[in-house]
Amino acid sequence: MIERYSFFGASTARYPAYATRATETSYEDSPLDAAAIAASAEALAGVARLDADAYGERSEYATLARIALATHKSGLGPGALRDRVADVMRESVRAGAPPFLFDAKTPVLPDVAAAAADAARAAVPAEAMREMTGAVAGELAGWMFGPSSRATQGGVTTVTIKKCRYLEATGCVGVCASMCKLPAQDVVFSEFGVRLHVEPDFATGSCRMHFGKTPPPESTDPALRAPCLEGCARSAQFAWYEDSIDEKADDLLGDDRCGALPARSRA
Image (cartoon, rainbow, N blue to C red; front, side, top):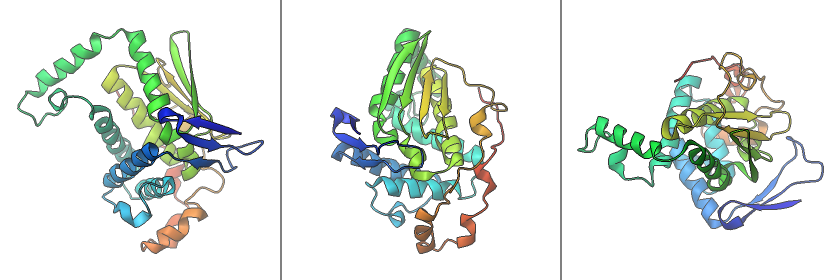
């Protein structure tokens, strides 16, 4: 089955019959999606001060996955990863807004900038803001996750990702939790005032993003207590690349940071 998605429906995802999390999806990225992948690869490499070019062609999604895995195993720890990836996401969100609204280094006082941003958010009805953030996730971030659908029911807008490309490519629960789920929940609330519960399904590889729904406490969130996936990458498909940049082969195995992540309450 083939599905078109992302900017202008110019990218395609080909799913094999009876697809599961473990079966490989074939993607063809449009030039716009390839540019988005390259920009994300560079930004993510900066989280752990990696050389993005050491991991392959930046516009290839496999390069982004390698950088994500290398960043996750860099020793920053889940809390620091969460915060630094959240900063990358915020920069992306704020890229289209006037810098003085967000940048504390501009001549405008930070308190004034914060008040202006709060006023702009308050001017938009909560329902419209929720729908907007759901649309942004489904339409403008398709290059990251793959095809998705969107529906609203009971005051919650849910974006259902058919099979998360990021999870499929990295094969790592820790990357999903520390470098996607938790920072996304933080950023959507801090920037838009919208509660978000990201609910990955590690059995199928799908994911549901519930905009307008408060996530469960981190101490009880099943996604933060999931065990490593079978064949967890430090996965063989990336191991040869790690060796090529002087990583120890032993580091590819037994990393318990992929498993239960320490809970940490966030506002």
